[in-house]
Every structure is written in structure tokens, then in C-alpha cells.
Amino acid sequence: MLSRRHLLAAVAALPGARALAQDTVDLGLPGGPSKRRLTDDFPGKRGMILQRNTPALLETPLTAFNDGIITPNDRFFVRWHWPFPTEIDPARFRLRVDGHVARPLDLTLAALKRLPPVEITAINQCSGNSRGLFAPRIAGAQWAHGAMGNARWTGVRLRDVLDRAGVRAGAVQVRFSGLDAPVMDDAPDFQKSLAVDHARDGEVMIAWAMNGEPLPILNGFPLRLVVPGWFSTYWVKMLDRIEVLDKPDDNYWMAKAYLVPDTPDGGIPPGTKDFPKRPISTMVPRAFITSIAEGARLPVAPTPVGGIAMGGDSGVARVEVSGDGGTTWAAAKLGPDAGKYSFRRFDAVIAPARGPTTLMARCTNSAGTVQPMTGIWNPGGYLRGQVETTNVTFV
Amino acid sequence: MRILVPAAVLGLSLLSVAGLSAPVAIALPDDPTEFVDVPGGPAAEAINNNCRACHSASMVLTQPRLTRSEWTAEVVKMRHVYKAPVDPADDAAIIDWLMAMSEGRGPAPAG
Image (cartoon, rainbow over all chains, first blue to last red; front, side):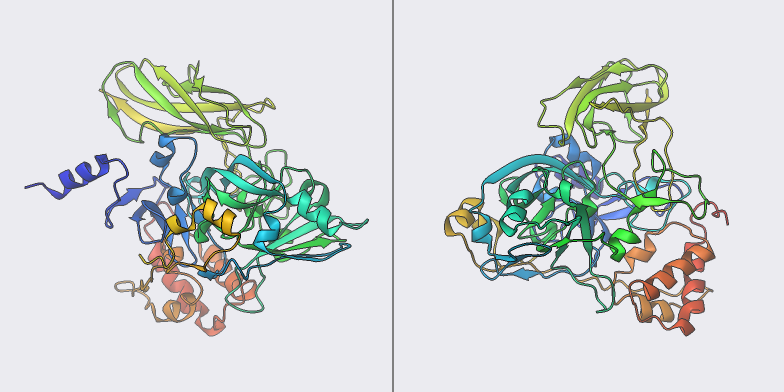
């Protein structure tokens, strides 16, 4: 008779196997609590790390990123601030465009889809991805590295929609909000804004499909904003309102939340009070080893080390891998280039010495920014970007 | 899991051809998890009564060890920013429970 442990191993080995309901993962968060349940309970999702049931916070296990540079819809992370509708009638849905425009619009999905379609492969990463790994620790969603995903988004250019409405002279920002709504009426509705020139740059888009399928409700059906190179806080889900503003947005989610220290790297010494802040914006380069798990014991032999890298707001130019805790580095081979906003696969082979060591991967983006060895800290737990470590033992 | 309209039926091509489609609905899982009394410590009644209307207990239970001032700031933020109807008279009982719950989670934070 198979033991439970053997059964788990057998199930885990099956391609596409469902995680068993009682599976747990240890996220390695310093000081804990670090264990989380893996859940299949959310419609259209499988094997997700359950961070919070309501409103849903679901994290992608790092191992899922080893399967390819595209994150499948059923493994894509989920993050909501407020409750959201669980039933949507596409026939009755309208996207309202108003504010400082010549012609306010109420667009049906069919009308939106008559605009020229565009596609982009882009990483959607939570501002607080990896927050649980900061030291000192920070209150908030205690993510490890899996509050990110990379998808092929299909939709229309935001610029084309704004041009139909006719942005009037004097417009400064464009504000976005969705169908999610606060529990209490007087709490701040989730709204985010982009500068009008950014909104009209031809890259920012309104997506209605993700990896060739309609957006899952949990990822923002029927429409979400896609802001390539920028953190997910701007990728408003269930987008139903676009408002052109003639003065800077002072709503809570722009003026008080999602702010980072106004320093070059967004970091500040822990405990610092009263410092200038700015809204979080572009992502930074990162690399993650996904082929070898933390704590692995491996035979002393040439060992493949692979994973995914991102350039942030530019492409991945180079990834280096170290098998000796950062003393020596070797260039990894890069996989196919799916565009500068996509994950890029890297693979290298290291020749390890016997004993414990730390594996590292370091990304340099096409703007020349190199991941630092030492991390920053800020009170939001945002913008983590240092070289990450995978501790292993060669025996 | 219950999906009223299976994802496969809502294929992209169908959506594109039809332009419109039937309502899409999902059923989210329930989360009955309650806070429990800390053995030999504070009771969970106040935190159960005040803190589960908007979010699951896991939002609290996954937090690292925080200082009393950090926990206090969280409770105050919930009331002032997110307008949670937390009775100020319950603050002490809530924060005592949070402190007791998170003791033993790693080294005591500074401050």
C-alpha cells in the first residue's frame, strides 16, 4: 500500500496533476509564519498558494515558472483589494469614458473590439511581490516571489479609445476604476491614474484576452488595463470607467497608498520618518532560479541551473549565474526573446564543489541596470530587486 | 468548485464571432476560519466580531510578528481609511489578542 508521502510524490509527478487539497508549501519567510496551503478551490485556478480567501490573494508557486515563460491562466496570481462581482453579463457591460473629453463614451464590448486589435507579452507583477522576504518584516500581504505572471494580452490601445473620446487640451491624467467596490460605502474606491502622455503612448492597452482566452473573472473579466513595464497596481481589473482629469489625481490610492521613498532606488533605512515619497511606477530587473528548490541536496556533478528573468521597464540583456555564493559568475544562455516586457528563460551549467553553497542569478537589463547584491527596504515592502539566493548542498 | 459557464464554452473565437455571450459567473469558496482564543491569553471574541466582515482571518494569521504600535496602526488604518466599523472600545482587546497571537514568531521586532 502506498504511503501518503509516496502518493503525493506519484501525483506530483503526473503532468498537470491537481495538487491535493491538504498540500502545503513553506515560503521560507524569515521568522514565519511561512507555511501556506495549496488550493484548487478557486474556479479556473489550480495549485495556488492560498494567502487570503476574501478578498482573494492567490500566489503562484515558483516551480510553475519553470514550465515556460508564459504563466498559464490557471496558475496566474490573483490580488483584489475589495469585493468584486462574481457574475458579469458581457452583453450589458459598458466601459464609460468621460471627464475632460469632447465626447463621453459608453462602449459595449462589441464596440471596443471593432478598434484595431493589438497583442503584447508582458509581466504583471504586484508592487509588493516578495514582501514577506523583507527584513525587518512589513505588514501587508505576505507574498514570496509568486505575485507575478507573464501573459500574452490581447486588446486595444488605450490611445485609440481616448482618441475616440477626444482628450481636451489641459488634460493631465487619466484615471481608471473597475467593478470592485469597498465593503463600506465611504471607504476609498480603488482608482489609479496615469499621466496623459503615458496613457496615450500606444503601449498601454485595454485587454480582453489573456493567453488567447477571455480574462478569468479572478483576473479582471471582461477588461483590464495593461501597463507594460509598470507594477500591477496600475493594471486595473474589471475596468469599467476611464476618466480624463484636468488636475492631478488626489484619490487615496494615488496620494496615500502605493508610495515609495523618493530616492534613486526607492529604498530608505528602516525606521526613517517623514521622507519625500512618490507613486510607485516602473519595475526593476529580477531573476529567479526555478529549476532547483531551496534546500535541495544534489550530487556533485555538472548541474543545470535555469530560471526566468525580467528587465523591468526594458529587456533582459544578460543573466549571470553563480554556484559559489556570488564569488564567481558565468553568463547564462538566454532563451527566445518574447519582447522587452516578457520573462526570458535563462539556462547555465555550474560545476559545484562538495558541500553547502548558495546559487544565484543576476539580471542586467538593456538599459544597463544590474541587480544589486544587497536589497533595499521601504515601509511598503515594495520594489524588491536584489539578487535572490537558493541555498543547496552538493553531496 | 462550481463554474456556471465553463471557460471552454467561452472560447475567444466564440466571443469574437458572437460579439456578445452569456453571463459569466463563478462561485468563490467559503472561508469559515475563525480566530480562536489564545490558550491562557486573550479571548478572540473582539477580533472575531470586528475583523472578519471585510477580510478572511488569514490576512491576520499570515502576518509576521509586529510591534504593538504596528498592530495598533493596522487597526486604526482599518477604521479611519477603510471605514471598518471597529468599535474603539474593542481596540485594546483586539490588539492584546494580536500581540499574544504573534508572540514567538521570530525575534521581537525593534521599536
